[in-house]
Amino acid sequence: MKSMTKLFAIALMLALVAAGCAAAQSKDSTPMLIDKLPTNLWNPQTLLGADQHKKDQLAMVGEIEKLWQGKYRITAQHIYLLPPDHDSLPNPVISKMDFHNAMNDLDPEPELVFSNETFELPYLNIWKTSGPHPKYVAFSLYPIADKNTLLGYFELEKE
Image (tube, rainbow, N blue to C red; front, side):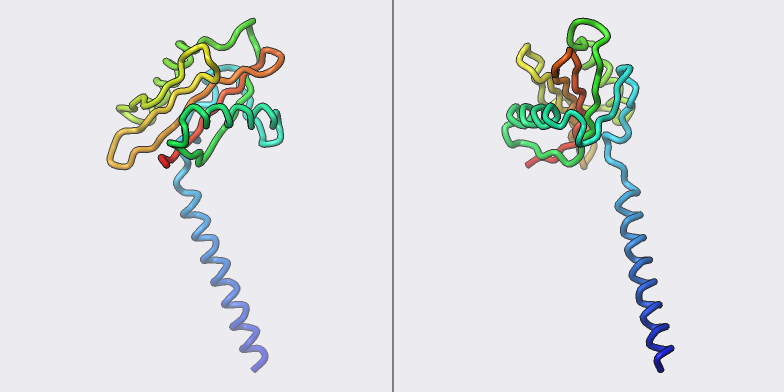
């Protein structure tokens, strides 16, 4: 009887583990749209961990959230460090064209739905994908100390 109970317990645990693995697989099988964006548009760009330049990352996110005034919520983000290769911010016009081309590779007709392209920083564009279930992707440039720049890719949900 004890061996049957042990076998049942083992079988139950294996079933739970298998179910958990299946759930994790299905969740991971749909990558975020920002994961499909190229990571080499502006060289050298280095992906930052949450603890790297933490204060600057929080400031960047806070500033872009102010710009869209509660209309969006961040669901995923990748923030990169762009070290200075010249004495100024990366050219926003060229950056916008490069990013638009990257969005075109993901979607045939992305639509620019929000932009902050003034001298007020951060520089920010929000793009909407086409189709019946659109997704929102934001691109931002944010200057920090030592002439470095943070480059942010954000996946958003409409509030």
